[in-house]
Amino acid sequence: MEIALELKAVSKRYGTTIALDGVDLDVAQGQTVAVLGPNGAGKTTMLSIALGLLSPGEGTARVFGRPPTEALQRGEVGALLQDAGLLDDVRVAELVTAVAGMYPHPMPVERVMRAAGVQHLAGRRVGRLSGGQQQRVRFALALAGDPTLLVLDEPTVGLDVDSRRALWQEVRARTAEGRTVVFATHYLTEADDYADRVVLLADGKIVADGPVDAIKSLVGGTEVRFATDGADVSRFEGLPGVRQVRFEGPAVALRTGDSDATLRALFATFDDIRDVRTATTDLESAFVSLTRGGQER
Image: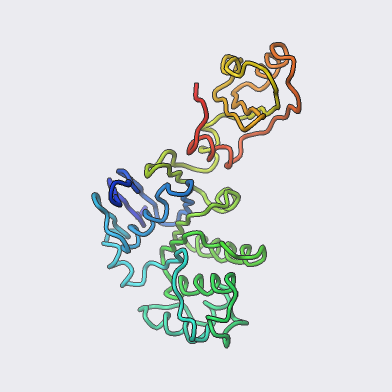
């Protein structure tokens, strides 16, 4: 299968700050990949290098086997970036038409505007649009060249529920045609719902990479949560099945591979346990455990 995006040993520094530290990443054509990580993890830097907007300090980036700038010039890549500038005095239809005209094989302008949900804004000046409407215009510009690879950095920020749903519907339509999508998001439910692969970044490094279910399985199958006042919390680490202990104020979260054994021992050992509940691992729990961590056993 052809590789749409390839990063090899990519590092980037800003002074003494390490934004990326030896990142290796291959994205096969047709995949939908979510890039997750806390603020400052290096997500935007990685995507900017993938697009040729930044040069890596070390390592190489390739898009369909070519330098990113060459792939952009060929119209193979569309991008929606955080806070990308727009021309305020231009009408929406004029802007989309002008951008589409820069590509060798653009999508028809009317189709682009329908796909991005901006057809009813065609005659409006960009500067008079709300933040969410401008975000939809940015999405339209990302689609204008009919790209094979779509790179989206926080694409649904500022969008209402219906606009988010419409954006992801269009993304799914494109991946169903065998196109590739790489997106960074803080909305973990979006990654869970729409990605078939998740890349977790922390401190400039990839700490986990795989299908959503595989990422969840890395941190165990069940989490036991409860509140406690005066128990010796260090003793939780020795309970049967416990793989990780995390403290959230007065609450304790135990990652366990055997919830039945953990619960039996918990109630037998501690007298002041209350508000006990269990939950299967979700992507948010995996994200917290793998990027911010807890006390690992």
